[in-house]
Image (cartoon, rainbow, N blue to C red; front, side):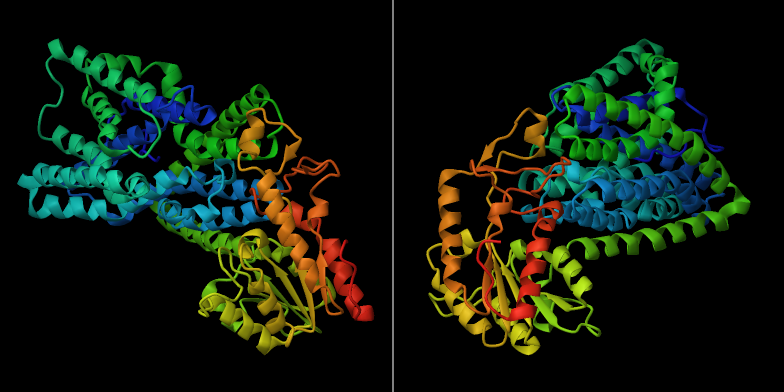
Length: 613
């Protein structure tokens, strides 16, 4: 979403370009406020891509012609233009997420921060599976994908353009056109078969930046502007194409594909009308120019503000949230532009301050990349399958007086942070071998057990833990084959001194979430009858394992009233569920006292604990 410099020593300033930026950022802004208001507003990103390609190429091309192009200066400009506001927003967003998000969502935010700092958010989003797919209000760095595409493009483009200028200057337009055509072809084909790839990947988006580059290069050797007789109609047609794309296009698997031509051709037409066109006059209106100047900061700030407000205030009325989101977005964008983005761009662009620019980028990366990883590791404890045999995630390994293993699937991992708190307080060693989307139980049908079960059993046999905590999505794991758990418990009890099984909490209807509540859904929320029957049947089966060294904790009573309706949030309005089947960090914290009492009970008496706790 960066667009190069508004004013440059190398380029004549055009207010209309800032006006075009304003149209782009406002379309995205309105689309994110309410998709129905401007269904195609998301294509503002495509407009930005064309502007960016045009401005950056204009600067590089002119410097190549003057023999003054410098790689160090090129990167200095990029750093000065992009990263001060980029990292400021990223760190402030992370701080805000710490106080507002549940532990799982905060952990995901940390992982995305690392991807954003490394400019690979687009690829992270592309490969992010449905299992961990979260609602948009839990992804405050979602909009950084476009910045990642741009930075990936500019990692190689300047070298490509310099090489073509040096060795094939006469064929420069032809070569750029060929690259543009190949990228567009890839966009059309990939969008048809892999829509997410087509949307996020650089090769399928590069053509939009190449269109801007072609305009810049052609502007240096040919007359782009038609005669005065046609310029008025050409400028109107270009604006109409952009407006049409805002109102006519829709989200879906068909985009970008051919449909991205609408905003791209319209943007190219506006940029080509650099004199005399109607678009040049309309887009140079002072209000649009002002918004265009702060467009980068507005783009950076608006989405995390929208996400955090919607996440925390999901019970607040839509008009109140809209006013808060609009007000905070423009306030933070204005402060960011005047206090950070503009002053730092001027300072870091000075030739004598080149070491400061590179030093600032290095420091920002050194801070953000490890910080994001640390947040991800600290707030969602989930083992990778290939680490289970070695003990998964291990905490307090040297000083722990006793050992605890947490085993299961994602319903086990959702208690990871809780168990870490308990083991820290009791000075116990904790090994987390729960694996999201994994099946940690043996097979009883064909004899071929999963590797996760074999590795989990080996880890328990090697560690011989004082406490083995087990939690799974029991209604699915035991469906049609309860003997799986019988075999598992028999095998695990041989080397685990005490077992604690957590039963399954109530399952929310799939259509009940923060978005539904913002749209008007209100408690009471009830579990689907068939889902409830299967869950209660599985939970009842767990009682068979109660013995002197095996207890079963009834988690469900903490999330369901006597009337049967599910507790969606606590008294402070914090969501107790991460999704339909998983507790949030706030929800899991409700089980901490019960788990602590159970462990202390075993330590004191060694006898079985009561079932209902």
